[in-house]
Amino acid sequence: MKIIAYGIRADEKPFLDKWSEGNPTVEVASTAELLDENTVDQAKGADGVVTYQQKPYTASVLDKLGSFGIKYLSLRNVGVDNVDATAAKRNGIQVTNVPAYSPQAIAEFTVTQLMRLLRRTPTFDNKMANGDLRWAPDIAEELNQMTVGVYATGRIGRAAIQIYQGFGAKVIAYDIHHNPQLEKEGIYVETPDELYAKADVISLHAPATKENEHMLNDEAFAKMKDGVYILNPARGILVDTDALIKALDSGKVAGAALDTYEDEVGVFNNNFGSFDKIPDDRLKNLMKRENVLVSPHIAFYTKRAVRNMVYYAMDANKSLIETGQSDKLVEL
Image (cartoon, rainbow, N blue to C red; front, top):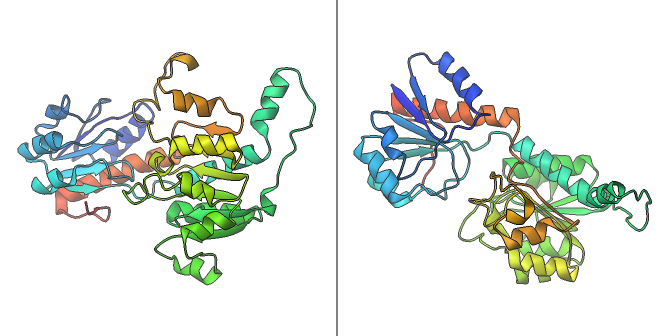
């Protein structure tokens, strides 16, 4: 049995090596390169492919895998929206993902960023760097006095709810699918509009779907409280960047923490050498603001999460090759 793993980063390599040691019957090939038209030929002779990337898994790549007789593609991440579903089905390629590598990691980071916004730490960091150790006028707010609106209550949303409640915040939530335990707690509202109207903080944990694209737009911001805080550790396309910038300029949005950004592909996880060389003026606009915290899609990035991403994807691919089954299969 042979599995090729694409896009293996330096932080993933030790976990891949450890998995290989524990699975001596599997020949594991790996490359730091992403799976695309230029690298797909490296998969020839493999039984399965494991990969992680933000670039699309195009029809031409999937057709090539199909021509090699490869029927198993295991992603080391949650999202499958960049997989050409038609091509995968045409080639009989089964796809697995890692539905939960560490919900707690993402939830913890989200709340950490909110606390930085509420306690004005970026402002105080800048003041102190310039020798200004005065308090005023940068007075803070307390999370225990706020209502947090959690949009989507999957694994990450539920982990975030526990933390928000631990701080003493009132939590309300919206999801088209109600979690039975949260239903008993009575935290669900009936519509997104109700969530927008009641929440001091909007915490997004929804997937990237056509229906959710730019769900936070001019119309949605207009329905929110003045001075609302926006948290997006989920998917960049959930937020209309132009609408957010307008809402920040007007004061409708008091602050935002963005771990994802709608044009992040090709920008995040790259070193441009200086701020001025970042090739995105809207992103730089946001990064310059003391009341906006931009992070390059790192909410997931913990040792535990990276280990789980590698192990779960490799285990799923091996299971598919051996049995044609995996508990992590997704429908495209």
